[in-house]
Image: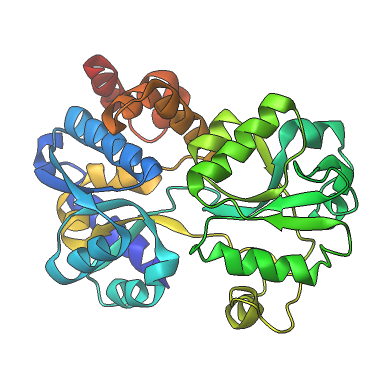
Length: 331
C-alpha cells in the first residue's frame, strides 16, 4: 500500500511540474542524520539538488525519531534521506496512508544488514563455509586469544539489542557444545579493534556486525546464512528477548531503509523529486565510501564529493545528462 501511495503522489507531482524550470525546486530542508552513511547521503543530495536542480538547500541536524516526528507533525524537514523505518513503521504507514509523507525510494538497495560475519579471506580459503552452522563445525578457524582450543564469537557492545539475539542464537545453535564461547567486546571501538586485529594477523573472526559501515569497507567481510528464513513472530517473542527460555535458530531481519519526503515537497519539487525516487546505492559502495571518510578524516561534505568524483557510473543514472554535467562542473 505504501508503494502505491508513494507512486501516485510522485506521478501527480511529476506530471504537474515536468515542464517547470529547475529553479522552481525552491527551498529544500534535508535532515543530516547523526550517523555516517546518512550524513554522507544528505550531502550528496545537497550537492545534486543545489548544483543540478537549482534548489536552495539547508541541512538540519536529524535523528530517526525526532526527524520523523517533525516531518509528520510539522512538515519539516522536507527530506529524510536515510530513514531506518523499523523503529517507526506503524506511524509511518499511517502518515503515508493519510497523505502527509511519501516514501520516495529504498536508498539502500539491499536494505540494512546485520548478522554474523567472517573475513572474506577466510571465506575464500574455505568456500565450504556458507552458513553459521558450518562455521561452528570449525572452532579451530576462530581461535580464542586466551585459549586456542576454543573458538570465539564476538558479541556487540553492552546495552545493544543485538546482545539478546546473539546470546539466544548461540544457545539455539549449541555453540558451547561445539567448542565456542562468547567474547564480550565492551564497546563499538573494541569490537572494531578485534576485526582489525584479525585482518592484521590473518586469523579467523566470527561475530556480530552490521552494514553499511566504514569497518566493512576497510575490512571485507562475508555475512553467513543461518539456513532458515527470518521468522518475525519468533524474533519478536524470543530471539530478541534477553535469555529467552527456548530459543530457535532464526535469521536476522533485513532493515528497510527509505528516503522519506513530505507531501508538500513531492508536490512542489517536480523533477528534483524524481531524482530522489531513483537515487539508491549498494551497501558495498557505501562501505567503501565510509572507509575513505574514516581513513581521510573527511567531513560528510568531503565524502559526498569523493563519491560524486569516483562513482560517476552510479549517480549519473539518477539524473539527466544535463543535470549530471552541471553537478560535475561544480566539483
